[in-house]
Length: 160
Image (cartoon, rainbow, N blue to C red; front, top):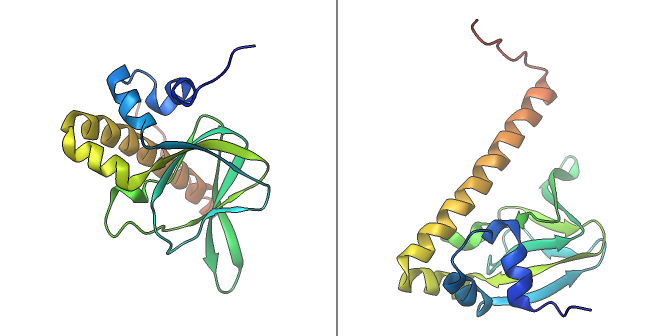
């Protein structure tokens, strides 16, 4: 039976796929294994955004709270996906809640540690920023599709 090290687990995650091994070593120094039980909050809106999560197993709901309706699930993320990019941008506060929907395991990367590593090595910072922006773009596209579905807005047909 193979023993999986944190470095191996990190290197296998799609978010860091193709990242130079010297950067994997830097990320490992900021990383810890985490697990959350079903129903457990991973983070809460307004809290310090001091972690970035690479999910390895399970699912988590990204939620907002509306006084009239309670918690509303905006998106669900799972294995191979990431959770949270607020660690990148001041004031480093969570804009949403995140809650485990089932037993969820991942790698938590310390945001302060990552920011320091990125300040020391701008190439690393550029790589992490590119990857984070790609995730943000995918999430914006998913939100767009949800809004189109919610409001039943007909999509324009392509010109032929």
